[in-house]
Image (cartoon, rainbow, N blue to C red; front, side, top):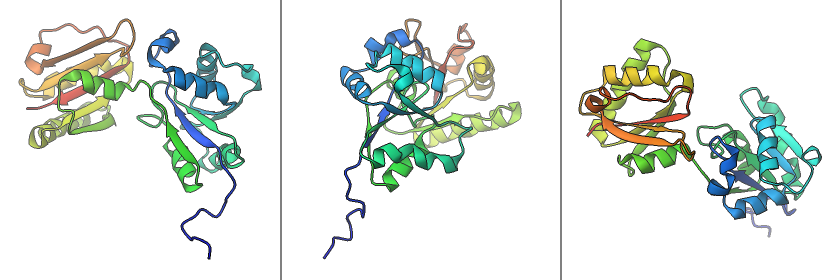
Length: 247
């Protein structure tokens, strides 16, 4: 009698590799991308990518042995028709492994890709996450805040009053549950985010500002709101992660 727990399709499938990229400067590949990742990348010729141009540049910098024009690319971003992504996994169904490449950092964390990973699981395709840089985790590691309990919010509301209310809600939750709260902002609005934090948080609340993580210009600093009010911060248009911890 056939085991009902076994997947009906017994053909050997390829794998879906989740491939981290650099957090900005492609010249940091040797610093942040393990050699094993490069060996996996070199073995693949089908990729699901967030932005075609960025992915092509990354693969060239990673010294992919095949001509870039000979590789197969599928774009997966906010403009992608969800009904179209089923065909993206056809190569894996046929036994050929595929790579999922983020725009920056780790796929599927504050990043598109979860839909294709979920579909891979449903189709019995093994998902293999590769080690690499993730600005959210790196910022948490370097913040000095609680790394046992934390919550990532993604982007907070843009409108001033809504943002202020959300910040106060996060601060209250952090103090109540001893939890670090992490969020990001579009780089050109970094100043507005910090101004709102300083306006709405208690003086003793701690804020970490982590900018240009893994780059030569990296800056990670944790101070209380009272201390930040005395600081000048140079982070305009620079990728930044904000962390809040109310003790």
